[in-house]
Image (cartoon, rainbow, N blue to C red):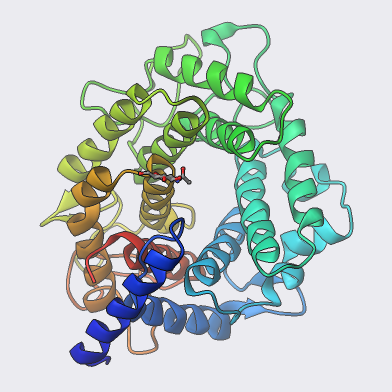
Length: 378
Ligand SMILES: *[C@@H]1O[C@H](CO)[C@@H](O)[C@H](O)[C@H]1NC(C)=O
């Protein structure tokens, strides 16, 4: 445990640093220390250096774990996981100029998660004066391939297909395309990024996938109606990050209003006692358990709320979400984490109630710590 006096000192130091470097937001050192400790536990429990994969992981959730640890190192300014980018499965493929179609096997959403992770690795390499180009370039290559997965027939107003079989349009794939498109534009990559972001938001806004509560359901029926499937938390976070990036690209603040409809609905409707609860989270013994994908969703909401606030760049908006972010981090730490410093799937109930422990649940918790270091109370 870190003593309160140390926390106060660390926060004073962080505040001094942030006035010296105006683009760096305040980071809470105590929360960063927790994030580093849990990340070291993630690596020692699950990461296999010889394969670059996590035991019990999957392609897209591994990509998110790699992204989280680079997001963390960008926050700490330190290099605990300096080798991970090149060692990771996605990093190896970037360095080897892989045929990416063989890596993501037609899963367009997985491909876009990989783009986000590779760009974050590139950001870290660039921040340390190292060669970032293999990571940025691989991300652009994948992005361009997925841009061709738009439904150019215009059915349901377009959108990106979930996979290359082109039988289902879900919210997440187009949300990720909105985010990667707008990010490419903000990053000055040129080309079609801004136009793609605009057309994707037009598609999403008119798709009917956002319901009357302000939450995004999973996807569309064949006849272009909201299919009424679950409003997973990650859907509610990635849309906000995408809209804030598009705001950063265009200056259109109405996009932030749209994003907060959904963020606020998440806080109102996807929580129990103020803590995020995925519909499949269940603290009752023998109750429901989230599947392998669902185990990472809450952390993705937290990470993309961080990205939302990064791009919104507005102290009033940061203040609005700060205490909620801090409460999630506290629940992850006090309720969700076991004696080996691995974060479980359930955050809302004590003693990791009903949790499973996997690299997905663990990186989900890390994302909450990193977001809170930047935007929670200290
Ligand atoms: C964030 O906003 C401040 C003004 O409030 C501005 O000085 C700064 O350049 C902005 N940062 C970014 C990354 O846009």
